[in-house]
Length: 322
Ligand code: TXA
Ligand code: MG
Image (cartoon, rainbow, N blue to C red; front, side, top):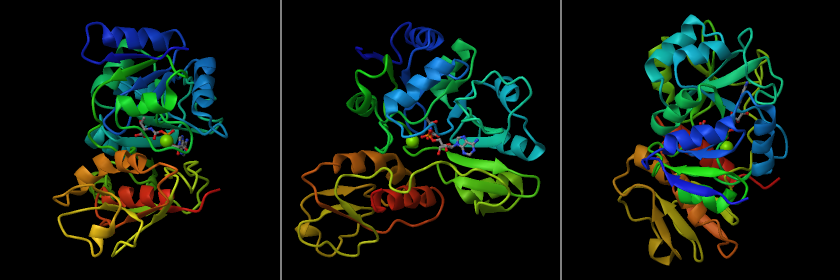
């Protein structure tokens, strides 16, 4: 299969992408978080092709992307708490896990047979494509299983060329990290995956405490492998100095002791901005994902706001390989 690349701003691009999805095709779609590997969520064969293209070890439940609130309501029942979050953060980098609505048209393969479904309304180009299609789009990140999520069309092609039908090039993703995933309950918000929306912003919008997932209350945690986003070499976190032979990923203007020894340095944000660092993180990890690179040192990243999501992804990148 030849994968076509078209610019999101080219005439007819949105129609072409939605037609492709409507015919059961796989499309790499730009969203504000990362590029998604989209398929018509109501078409079981198309959804199955997602798992095949990614080489996923098992059928993880997928996020269904919607164009508007009416479409969301056909998929899940939105409690008053969920509504508060949706009103504040949609369209945007927040995924809501909620009970599947009666008559929901999403194929069971998308939700891996769970009684809940993860739903998100993305910004921009992806939303336009979904609106044109008129059906929800199931989309995991557009990378082969175990690799970092792509934040450019070129990164999508590098991983999946020949395995998907089309990539819509919408430029660099603004957030650069996957969405925050929450399960809103009556009296609290369960945080299943830190991401583009920070913990404090969630608590503020809902007026409720945000708690970590602890395996209680029958909620299934995201099926994220612990060793994920991992470059080929070993990753050493919270480095305070550079050892000989190491590559360095740093944040902020300060010189790291021993920095001159680093084989190569990537600064996630020279000014120390966490938002800019998030947007650059996956490109940095993949730039250093090379069998010739044995050791990568990463300096500490503050855990505030989107910093929590950056630390989560770094921990997975550094985890022992399964
Ligand atoms: O930003 C994002 O969220 C990107 C873009 C493309 O939207 N998508 C993304 O999808 O990161 P993916 O498949 O890489 O991650 C989806 C996560 C998985 O960890 C999955 O286990 C979890 O969502 N998930 C899906 N349905 C769930 C459910 N019903 N309950 C709990 N977790 C669920
Ligand atoms: Mg992913």
